[in-house]
Structure formats: C-alpha cells, structure tokens
Image (cartoon, rainbow, N blue to C red):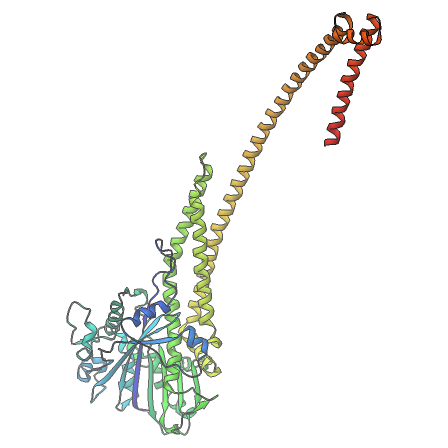
Length: 530
C-alpha cells in the first residue's frame, strides 16, 4: 500500500473549567466548559470567528455548542518539521523524507465543553505504509523536539526567554495555550492528570491500490490499517498479532459509507483512508450532505474527543470537590449538635449557611445533569443518521460512556450530600420545634397553676366580701327595723299615718324589695347582654 500523502492531526485539550462550586466571596460560579462570557474576553484581544460546521449539524448545535476559532493576526499558523532533524531520531531514520513536513495549528473553543488545540503534519510525498504510521506516533515521546519555532516565534511573546530553535508537540501546544490565555489575562493552569490522555491522533491518508473494490483492499491491507492506530513498534512490539488486527477492525470500530472512504476508530487514535482509485471526482452525497469527506469526519472526531476530554476533566475536578463537601457536611452536623445542646439561644447563622450549601450543591448537580443530557444525545447535535452512528462508534472506542457513567455517579453523590444536609437541617428544625413546644407547654402549665392559685385567692376574697356585704345589709335592716329615728321609717309613718312598728316593717319590706329587684335586673341584663 503506497501512501500518496498523509495528514496527522494531534488534539490537545484546553481545560477552561477550574472551579465547579461558587466562589465564597463572589457567590458566583464560572460555569461548566466554555461560556459566552469567556468568548467575549477573547474577542477583546484576538480575532474570533465561528468555525466551519458541516451542514448536517443541527441548529441547536450551532447555537448552543458553537465552535469558535481564535487567532492572532500577528502569528503564522504554519511552521515545519525539519526532515533531517527528524531522521536523526532512530525511530524515524528509515523514512527517507526528501522535503520538510509542513506543520499547521489552530486554537478552537466550543461552548459547553472544553477547547482543542489541533496540530497537524502535512506530508506531500509518497511513503511506504510500513514506516508512514510512525509519524502518527510523534506525540508518544515527549523528547522529540523537531518542530521549528522561527516562523512562529511571536508565540513566545509572553515568555521570559527566547524560544528554542525546535520544540516538541507538547511544548508547542502548551505555548499556544499560554499565548492566548495570558493575552486575555486568564489562568493558564494545565490539568496534569490528563497529560497522557490528551493526545488522540487522527490520521488521514490517501492511497492507491490495485484491488478491485474496498472489501478486497481491506482484506489485503488489514494488518497495515490496524498498525496506524495500534502503533506496535512504539510499544516495543514488532507487529500486531492477527487477533489484535481482528479486534481493531471489528464491526463496531469501522465506519464506511462510500466506496472510496474507510474509517477505523480506536482508543489509540482514528484512521481515515481515502482510496484514490475509487474516487469519481464528484463529492459523494448522502441525504444531500457530504458525509465522507475528511473535514466532516474530522469535525465529528473533534466533537467526540472534546466531550471525552471534558468528562475526564470534570471527573478529575469533582473528586476533591466532593471530598471538600463531605467535610462541610460533617462540620455543619457538628455545629448543629453543639448549638442544640447549648442552653443559650441557637446561632441561626449555621442554618443559613446550610441552606446556601444545599442550594449551591443542587445547582451544580442540575448543571451537570443538563450538560450530560446535552452531550449524550447525538440526535440533538446531528441531523444525519450516518454521522450519529460515527459519533456513537467514536464514543464507544474512546471509552466516553465509562466516564459519563462516572459523572452520573458523582451526581448521585452530590444528591446524597445535599439530602444529608437537608435531613440534618429538618431534624434540627423538628427538634428545635419540639423543644419550643415543650418550653411553651411548661410555661403554660406554670401559668395555669398561677391562674388556679389566683382563682382560689379570689374565691376567698369573694367569700369575705360577701360576708361583709351580708353584714352590711343585716346592719341596714336592723337599723331600719329598730331605730325610731330612721328617716325612711319616719317618712312612711307620716305618709301612711301608721304606728312605729308597722312603719318599720313596711320600710324593711320596701328596702328588701328594691334590693331584690336590682339583683334580678342585673342578672337579666347579664344574660341578655351575652
């Protein structure tokens, strides 16, 4: 199999999410992945354009996951690999390259995920497949400093030292990210946990063959095709075994919808093969879309890798966040326990902090769920079934579903933490309410006892005043009945011409009748007033 030309794409993540929970001072979170606010910061310093999007991607993808290319007009996006320097490395010395390898790069940010730095090598001369695949493994040794810096030395504008004459792929990706982020005044911290996972190459080759069709071509070249993603010599294995070839070229790793296009997806990378013999010169259209061209397949590959990177970054960030949240839960429970046992008035500041904690954790939980729903639904992003199939194959090959399930597990942990705090909060409120009710009942009991004592006292006072009133009435009647100088008796005697005895008796009857009538009138008034 002769390779007429080849492009090796190396994708590096651009982590932009460094803080998942709200900041204690501002009570604001940065959001998950790239946000419109972050894009606006880049627009203030660099040239920002919407990246080319294949026609079969949905309007939802274009609006909610918009990919942007960020560029600096003062910096070239092209340099080269010196072929002589490359062939000084034993692993590449048999390539026998006659010209420089052109190196291109771009810087891309997509909303709601992480960004990507893509560096690709363009080889425009014929190479034997037995050696060509080695170029797609250039990233595997971080000491291969073969990329010239002279054409792109402006990238080192923010560096304290002059650029070295040659750098590695990793070093170039790092300086690209540093240049753009420092230019915007943003943090440039790198997620070190992903150092060995971020380079997932995409290799595109154009080949000639004497085979009559694609099926015969694959059967004949299957070992060579597998080696482009397996890279046996890079791992100190001479050649891939046929068992491993069968594994790499299994149906769930193959995507092909055109006679001249063949795609193999694997964890170690992806191979795109363009068989020139079967190329009619007319773009192949499926459902009115160009699905099998290199740029379309590469875009879907970038989407899958970006999601994979992002889930791994989130998983890496969630571990310490959840551990920190667990400590906060323990602290809240301890403070509540001490507050409840204290005889002094409870400090309700801790309740407010717990409420904010639940809101904050619940917000993160829902943001993660929304994000997973967005990136997990291929139908929401792609309108064409064939590329949905390709995206699913890429997701399966990269192991994205495992990391997605891991994030789901973290979401469940967040839900449990929030529920624990809510339960503790509710138990405290119940205990506090029960304590308040008990205190109220005790106070009510004391008040009832005091009221009963007061009623008892009033009864005795009533009895005393009743006796005094009775004595007073008795004295009045005695005075009327026995005192001949009583004015009422004298008045009756003079009016009716009665003797003293009858006048006294009539006066007593008159006074008693008036008092009885007044008493009955008061009783009648009270009954009718109620």
